[in-house]
Length: 369
Image (tube, rainbow, N blue to C red):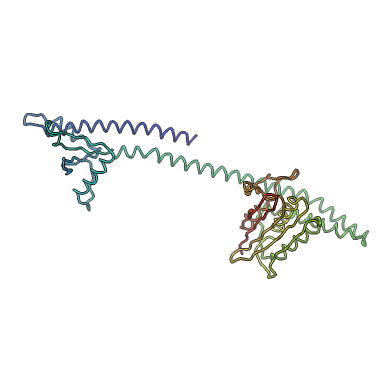
């Protein structure tokens, strides 16, 4: 609505400026006629009205030239103190000639070669009035941009509140059954101490506790610590290998030298796990996942590559949007959470480096050293 109002104002101002420009042109015709009368005046001519018309022009710049192009007189033209007045007036006259058709006055009606030309330009007031709508439109556009920015910020703040509420509630709901499961596993350990499945059950219960802890950290700003990236990635790969099909091959391309980065290990493991689980789904449980690390000058680059279905280039950014999913089940929050963890909590970047449909995808994570 603001843009529509500004455009209407622009149109109205345009017609107003056009009408005022015509009126100034008519005034100059009258002024030129007064100049002609003054040139033809005799001792008996009453010049009161003529001089009133000539002196009444206090806004429209005028320069009078003779047939040789020399300046005869001028009015309402401000000459800089440092400029040559004659040359400056000639230059101004040429500019006026290029924008407005001059009014020619014949000094001798029998000879067309004896004349003067009246060059004129729009008044300062008219120029300001002509530029005002554009200034108004600019102000309205700034207002619209600020309004859109405020709307997006408000929307993002609302999304953040939803994230925090959902995460806190999930952690809270998981807390009670996990505590019970931990107690039951301890009882089972005492009763069936030789059973090999009990330690595995205990590991899965501890895993649930880690997941609940991760959800509780989403709602607050976790404190990053210096961690060995090699060890973090090894833990993730080991966990994925134990809980996925043997048809999925995990390949590590990690430098042997220790790479230390400031991260929250628990949340960062979640990011890599999400990328690996998405890769397994994209490959339909059969293929190769390669995790590679590059230690460059100021960054650490982590690539998670799969041989799955790939992503169309048009969807490179939308895959990180909440709710985006190609699976029949799921909320489509995995990559959105990963992006939040990497970019907001670790001040890094995560994006689709390359992808080709039916050949595979490479997700890249950039962390500052």
